[in-house]
Length: 185
Ligand code: 5GP
Ligand code: MG
Ligand code: MG
Image (cartoon, rainbow, N blue to C red):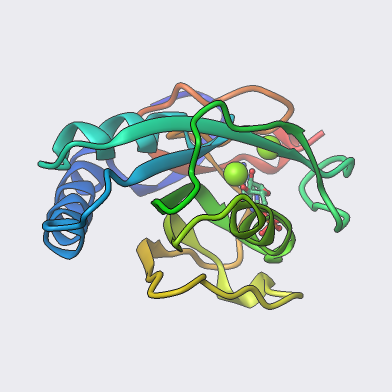
């Protein structure tokens, strides 16, 4: 374990098991779609989850990324993110599965989902690795028949690892943990 980590919440083994379950569910739900679904990762945090998830989805899919930045600092976002990297793939009349590392306040999704809808997505689902319902400040809504998938419910801690950073560190840890207090600086 990394010396800055106080404790591990989900090990790489627990993560892998849960990601397989999510991928099986998504494969079942999207099998038989008339168009090829587009899996859209929210950069940068979703990169590991996206990579693991898509390798286990047993369907033809497209993959793309979008980036939404809220100019907050430290451990809290400050609302109204702007889209600083847009899609390359055309999502018009296609089903989109938006992949997030963690949903906290809801600001990111409440900005990104309407953006995908405006580009003509026939549905927008969300697949988030972690969901922190205690942090919610704004609502967001799936589009069309879109569903909400989540890996685990996250307690009210700021977590790092498996794609998630503090000050652009710790993204490469293969597990999710909580930092020792002296490293949140
Ligand atoms: P939201 O817009 O829902 O507040 O969350 C958006 C982003 O904030 C997440 O995608 C993630 O990048 C970041 N975030 C929220 N909670 C955490 C956390 O506990 N740890 C880390 N590393 N990032 C978080
Ligand atoms: Mg994110
Ligand atoms: Mg971050």
